[in-house]
Length: 229
Image (cartoon, rainbow, N blue to C red; front, side):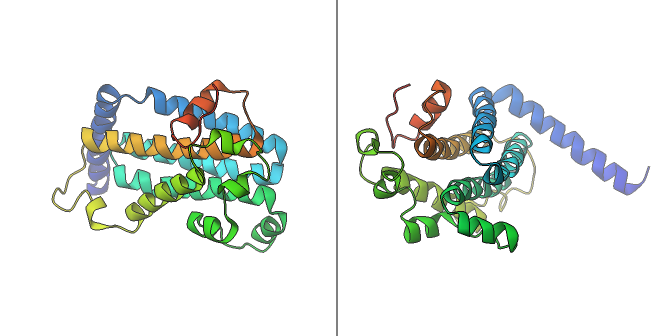
């Protein structure tokens, strides 16, 4: 057997062990339920706008990547991809209301650089006054003025810290090994949950989507809105 095949078999043997430990010792039940809910979101957005809805095919694939990386112990990699999930989700809601920008994005192969921080700065994206244009009851359901955009920026900033390799977010500097780490796994699960929660908030608000108690429950986890479940 070639060295290459031996190396690959050793690698995947280790990954299988990590997967087993993750599934045996970490509770992924809620996270996988949230993953299923995103198919419901995808289908609804696609029913409203097939062009923008296509972005949700990519979002779901990337979210699958996030969860797969988590299960196999690539915790920082999981959060790096998660930032892309958040960015593309925000882009989908932005482009739904900005058809000219979407036309340029689609037909001129413009980079999807509608970063969350730029959206909130330049377009007041999901600040209270922005939400009021399509959701009149926002002041009765948000926990405080601009709570949604503030939480969105907070989560995005933390994800950027992982992407850009802020020292405190590097996990393999002192330990050159690939293994299941309960603390890092649970921390990543919480981070993913918080991110999916704020995306759910954006979705519910934009489309006044109240027909799924499970999505409303996920949105309420953000603690920036109080939806009746």
